[in-house]
Structure formats: C-alpha cells, structure tokens
Length: 449
Image (cartoon, rainbow, N blue to C red; front, top):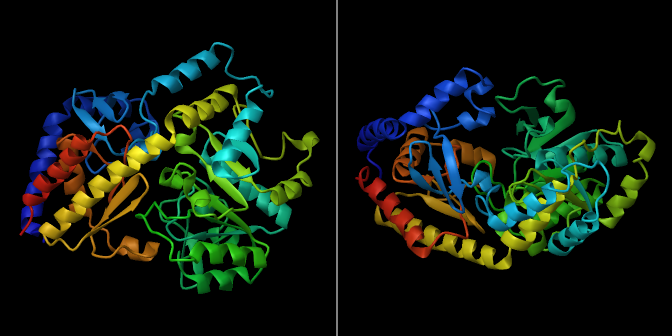
C-alpha cells in the first residue's frame, strides 16, 4: 500500500529535484511567455504535472534530449504519433527527396493511387480520403454522414476523444448531454448536436439508436483518453448491428488504437466499419489524416458531393493530400509501421506490463495495468473501469504527479494526462524495459507501507 505521508514528502523532494535538473527548460518557458499564446505553440503542451514542461532539444528513435542535456526514454512518443520513432532516417530521406520536386501542387500526383492501394491492403477499407489530421478527418466524415443520412445529431461515448471536433466534447448523465468541462467558444448547445452515453452499455445504445435521429456513431474501438477501456465481449459487433438496423453510420476512429496491431484494431477483430479514421503515426511524423469508407458509403457520398461545389463543401483544404503527406504515409507504412516493428513494440509492452504487475503484487498496491498492443496504462484501482464515469472517479492527482515527476527525474517521459499512460517503441532494448521496471520499483519503495 501507499503511505500518504511518505507520498507527500517524496513528492516535495521530486518537485525540488525537477526544478534543479531543468533550469534551462524553465528559462525557455519564460522566453515563450513573452511572445506565445499559452506559453507554448499549443495550449495542451502546458498540460504537465509541474509548473513548466521540459523543452526538447533533440530526438532520435525512442529517446529525446532536453535543453538541459538530460536524456530520456520517451514513453509519450507524441501520444503515439511518433510511434515510428523520432527522426527515422528512411522516412526523412523519402520526405527530403519528395520535397526537392515541390511540396504542394493542389493537383493529383502519381503517388496517390499507390497510397490508396497500400491503405486498402493494410486496413481493409475500399476507398480513401485525406485530411491534415485525424481531427479534420473526423470533421469531414461527420459532415458527410449528416448529408447522406439527412440527420443532424451524432452519438458518442462519455470520455471519448476525437481531436478538437466540437460536437464530440460531450458528457452525458441521466439522459442529459452537456458540453464537456473546459470546452470554449461553443456556438450551439451541445445537446442539439450530440448525445453522449456510457461505453459498454448496449441498452443505452439501443435506446438512442432506435430514435433514428443519429447520422453516425463515432467511437474508438478501445477507449484511450480516460484510461485504456476495452469493449465487453461482443459489444462492438452488437453496436455495429444496431447501427445497421437503425441506418446509423458506424465510424471507428483509430488514431490511437492503430498501435494495437500491424493492421489496426478494426481489421484484427474483423469489425469492417462503414468508415475508418486514421491519423497520428500514419504519416511518419508528417501531419496527415485519412478516412476509409466502404463501397456502399462511397456510393452515397458520390450522390451528394458535386465537383462544382468542392470549394464550399467544407471538405478538404489547400494542403490536404499533398505530395508530402502521401510520401509520409508511404514511408511510414513501408519503413516503420512494419510487422517486425509491431512485434517488437508489443513484445516490449508485455515485458513492462508483466514487470509492473509484479511490483503491484509485491507492494500490495491494489492497482491494475491495462495494455493495448504497444500501449499501456496504470490504474490506481484493482479493476479497470468499464466506462468513463468509473475511470474519472479513480483519479488520484497526488499519486499521478509523484510517479510522473519521479520518472522524469530518472529519465523516463510518460504521456502527460491524469494517469500513467505510455506508448512503447519498437526500438527499446530488453535491458531498457527492465531499467524502467527497476526505476518504478525504486520510486514506489520510497512511498510504500
């Protein structure tokens, strides 16, 4: 068990050590605050347990070095966007070669059909569209679903994350949907555009779908933004069947769960969604999103997308589908998102998860750890939640801050959020996996009863 008095004392020590080890990062934050909104290029870069984040100087494969010269094994990996590794030489070479011929044409290139074929073979969807991110892809497909169904509302799950799509920042309780706390500048009452229900509740799902009011159900096949929450057996298959019954389009967003397997979660489990959304690591570090649709959905889209109105449809953008984006996808799929790399990353994850479970048992912590391919997270309860309500109820801010900060001070970066979430690189060695386990053991020894 964790001794709370020891925890508070050790947290104070780790906070002090963090400041001592990161003086240049603090100075860089001060410099940014003079010229940048949010003290960072994006506001969520401030989402760090301490008063300031580290400032990165360099990255290579699974490691980063900060401006103070501290080196880390990176278990954040850009929230899995850098799963292929930082600075992949093969990806960089491909992008550099493409760049010499021009980066933006706003016309098709000879590479496009090849990329569509690669995506179809890997992930199973028959026709593909592109965006600058999974967020944009989600926006596009929601618009398309509304148009082809004639319905305006969408259905999502509490605790979901589909990028910065306004309609998906929703929480539902007792049959009432509201905007998720923290969302700003809302133009339309969230309840008018969205209904949010709990994951893994088939009865609640059918109650909503039978209203025949929803253009689409948008979901992660495994929830990842409030802890890794797996679907109950048969849940996703039943959800898809209900969507078909009530003419609601079944969308799977795999921006995070793509690290499950070489071909992603949906194909591995034979889910064949109407629409599949990809992002993050799919571009090898270059910003890109992609959405694949079934033939039946394509035929419905063909009926409403008119070339003469392409500039007013709200689908696309000047930089969408650039030669650089297509090159990034090809290079990522061929050189980094390989079966061998997936096997290594998933194997590394298994080593670490087993080690964490041993530690949990040794100290009788009453915690649990969940994994999803090359991702894992630690729950501070003995049984992971089955939905967002259970996940949020188990938040422990002091414990999270202590573990996160102590790991940073020992050379390990986790994904900054509210629990210990990690993406695991294929480039980790077995000894580095055990080094992480030993570091976590040492950190917990200091606060154990």
